[in-house]
Length: 231
Ligand code: B12
Image (cartoon, rainbow, N blue to C red; front, top):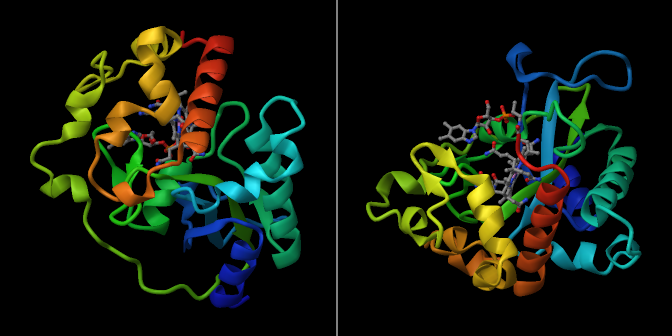
């Protein structure tokens, strides 16, 4: 399949093309329909708030059942895979998780940010992965985009000082401190408009999530952490 027609098909399903690569033996290569392993992985997801309406207007967003975005992704990425002859992979579900962050770093110019999540030179921290398409064929791909991390030239790193409870340090991400904060009334700002540390990043600020999307993610994160608190 030609990459250009694949990109159009991804967009027609309300998703964004998030890069592609030829996985090696070290990449936990998923299986494909013919019983072999994938020779091309294409990541799909959301960029900024541009793809949000596709989910927000879908039945899963309004049916009141658990995990609406994951169920939407299962359905829509499933339909997309069917249309293009690929097998699906998903970033969510139960552990062990598929190494989407490692795959993403091979597929597009994303790099670990000081917050742990990946930063993109254009989209900043405002992007996510909803699935991957595994192809038995080795699709022809463009030269990799090897732009450096925007964090390398960011001297101030406002992301590290913006969290009201100092949840991001060199020791990592203090999930319990974050959860206690967003669950309390003092965390209403993070809960309503999205994580303050993430919003402090100047890169791709024009792609920041709209309040509906930001609030949805924080609510889902809080709910998931309360159901499965960190050990
Ligand atoms: C478990 C998980 C969490 C856990 C723990 C995260 C952690 N820091 O350990 C909790 C619940 C706390 C969490 C929280 C959040 N998560 Co989360 N999470 C995941 C999940 C499901 C699995 C990660 C994993 O364990 N992978 C397994 C390992 C084997 O895969 P891997 O790719 O090899 O992982 C490597 C990299 O992550 C790398 N790495 C990670 N951080 C760093 C930092 C540095 C400096 C370096 C060098 C490497 C590195 O090390 C890992 C081990 O090799 C992923 C989805 C996925 N499948 O990747 C989302 C994912 C990472 N989460 C995501 C997000 C957005 C969040 C939240 C902002 C909440 C939200 N959903 O909106 C918060 C904040 C996270 C933060 N600041 O760290 C996005 C990140 C998108 C992006 N821009 O990168 C992902 C990719 C989900 C998605 N659908 O897009 N998450």
